Every structure is written in C-alpha cells, then in structure tokens.
Image (cartoon, rainbow, N blue to C red; front, side, top):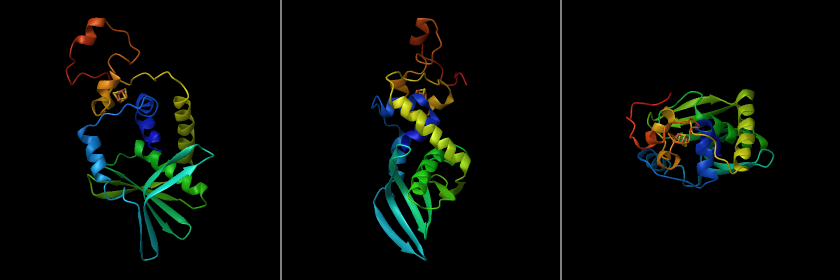
Length: 199
Ligand code: SF4
C-alpha cells in the first residue's frame, strides 16, 4: 500500500524502494517512524459506539493490494481509515492515494467508506478526505502502474526537481545523472548549488 504513496511522489522512488530494496534514512523518515509509534501497536478500543482498530492489515486480491491501516474507526458497516503523516497536510497529495488504497480494500471487505482522514502529526489535526469514485479510479490505475514497475527491471527516469530535495534516496538515485538529460560528463562532478533545480 505504501508503494501507492511512493508512486504518487516519484515513480523512480517506487522502483528503488520496492524493486531494488534501496532505503536510506533521513531526519524526516526517522520523524515519520517515531510519529507512528502509537498507531503501530495493534489494538482495539471502543468508545461511544465506535470501534477503533490500530494497525489493521488489509488487502485486495482483485487489485493486488496489501498493507496496514494505521487506524480504522468502525461504526456499524461504515469504516473510516485514518492515515498518520508526520508532515503538514497536502490536499490532493500522495498520502491521499495511500488512503484511497486502504478504502478500496475496506470496500472490498464489505464496508461503506465515504470518508477517510489524513492525520498530520505536525499540525496535530486530522484532515477529511472524501472517498469518491475519482479517488478510487486513481487508486486502481496507480495499482496497475505500480505492478508494471514491479514487473520490469528498468528503473524509471529520475524527476530531478524539487521533490528530490526532500528525498532520502537522493544519494542512491543520483537524479542529476539519471533524469534522461544528457549533459557534459564534467558537470556530474561539479557540486550543484542547493538552490539550482530544474523545476
Ligand atoms: S531523488 Fe528524486 S528522482 Fe530520485 S527517487 Fe528521490 S524524488 Fe525520485
């Protein structure tokens, strides 16, 4: 499921992490892990007619998805997934595709999922995300594209734009050399000012 978020951020990142098994930590990834400490502990609590399940495994054979929901709140047949993110909420951002993937699995399990939330640890608040047909179609399309990436040995080209600034895989990816643009070889050995990005 996390591959959906990686895919929405950068196709090459998806392949590096899930095909090449490349992973590097950064302050942001460590902060992300720490912010998940509470929800990574499986458990069930009940309050006022709502059953809250932490760290719930979900999957869909139909769409080839599997993953773990941080939190799902169940009220009767209605399930509401809540995905924890360390950074600030970005409307329409990559996390929504991951949330949509969770919703698709829960729908496949027989629940109604009209709404989900992205909980921003930085903002200490949750942001509602409508689970509509558009989001579900985007998830299905992305799941197919991710499977195609998994099935090929060719890495997608690097984006080499502002996203790379925050990417912990930058040293392994070498976006300046792998973005498909030819440039004089010497350029690759000249440190680039941090402010100069092709975006
Ligand atoms: S450094 Fe840039 S191109 Fe490479 S994986 Fe990260 S975001 Fe993608």
